[in-house]
Image (cartoon, rainbow, N blue to C red; front, side, top):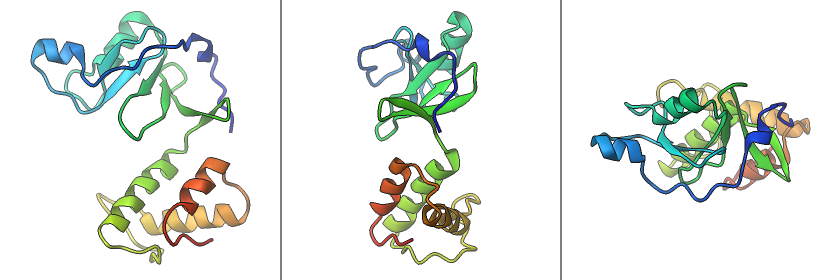
Amino acid sequence: MVVDCPHLDTITAVPDGGNVCPECVALGATWVNLRQCLACGQVGCCDSSPKTHATKHHQATGHPVIRSIMPGQDWLWCYRCEKTFRELDAEYVLVDSFFEAGMWFIGQHLAAGGTLDIDPELVVGDGFPLGSWATTYRDRGQRGELRSDERQALEELPGWTW
């Protein structure tokens, strides 16, 4: 689904964000993940970090859209609309957070020696319903209700079947 966000026009081309939160470095603090403002390029730590510099930057400037600059993450977040999205085929599309979480957990499951023959009742981690997730996305795929990027990601899992 194409994202309906009136703040997309604030996105500008910014240089690569780097690999530190400059404000945390100045304070001798640590961070968990990094985010980059897409209005000005400022890098700050995420809301799971003790200092939450990315959100503080938004609160101070009003700049609405950030992106994750963590390896393997390609999503954007609009503070004002409270929507997560990514660029796909020259459009911005909403991110399905349940799908994203499931892809992470299925990767962990496979890396630990698990298979894609998943019991529908399987729960992993701190309560993620991996079995229900697999059933849900197999069903959506069979009904033709997945975006092309979601279908591709599932089909790239070794042994995935519909």
